[in-house]
Image (cartoon, rainbow, N blue to C red; front, side):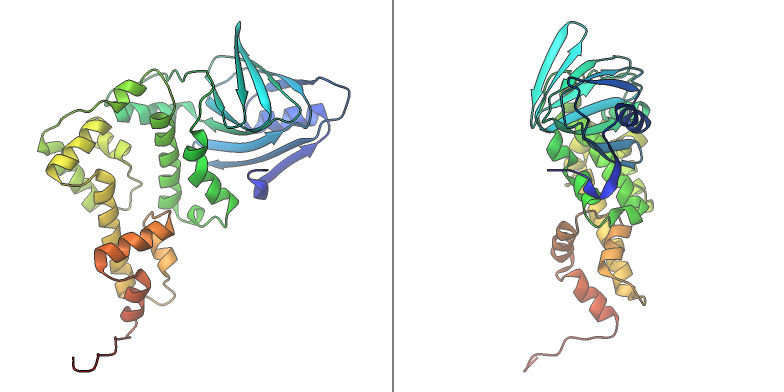
Length: 323
């Protein structure tokens, strides 16, 4: 299945054009086809904040040499096989598996003729800042394990859905930023790296940081908060903040923020401004899954959001007989 087909960037049979297109989007590299046949190179690519994602296939077996890596790269095989060489170490991967490539560490890679990959590039500083916030201390480098790993597709799913669909989220800065940050957190929490065990440990904090976090969410719900950025704002680790919220607020930080934003959406729909839609109200307050939003809204307010908007425009329910 060709991913990101709405975002075609390059199609070529020439080696120099293929190298130039991929170098402009991702990183400098050189390719050497194994046969004299022309390439059937296909590149689709998108960017959201610190994240670039692309679908790449060459249509024949190629040897690839990368250099000058300044970002983190995660290459997920959609079809076919690849072999990556890091010095003398060889890493073989097949469809459904992902191999990380780290800044400052060149690699030579062989893609077989049937290989197609979703290539993810994440700028180094934003990802390291996210991990620093998760841990509550400075991190200068992340040592992702350069072995075949699974789980990246589930992390990427909301991102791919956005760019392969009608693209509702990109119209709303808060929703787009939330999607980007969810992807960064998913990488750090799902993939194997040298600090993953530390990320997953539980910590305990007094109620003070939780109160400060609650105040931030109430006063600035329009910011693209995630648990990671909220933990950084009150100077505790993510695990500590999560445990503190459960103990002192009775819900997770994400649930608290969701309820605050649901209240704001309710206010917007209750005002019933001309031209207002439920979708725009939800997206403007960072709700990226409209089905989940509708369910959460109904649970909180006892009616679907469309009903709130309908009533705000002067409609009133018809009384039942005898009421």
